[in-house]
Image (cartoon, rainbow, N blue to C red; front, side, top):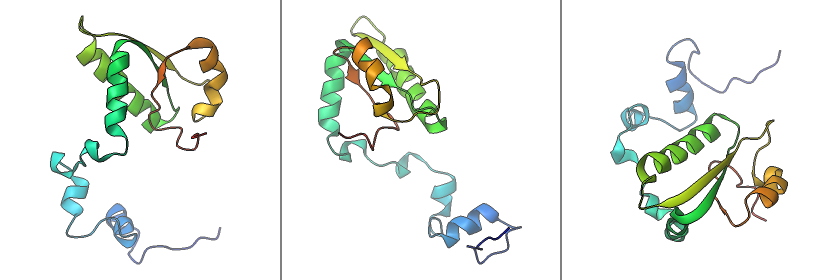
Length: 140
């Protein structure tokens, strides 16, 4: 088997750190915050493009609407969908809100919005689609 060695360090000691250091991801100055992050390391979510419009739209559907949650069938897709779903159900499932969540897990390894559009059109007329960890290539 042919391979290209991409690290200058021995692969037997501190492999993860050395690999990340060689790729410019971690160094002596940032390794503490990289391996042991705190809330100080988080970016302000309000800096995301169009986040305020997204929040307002979500609020509208929380007060009388259906939220459709297509789940990307991989580890980060399941994680982001479960965090979103559990947050809404644990924190907002009260008499002050009136919403319904429909989620869809593909049978195979399909990713993105385009793979479920036929199902969506027939099953969730008028719902807000919340795409977590998916659909970045499905703009059109």
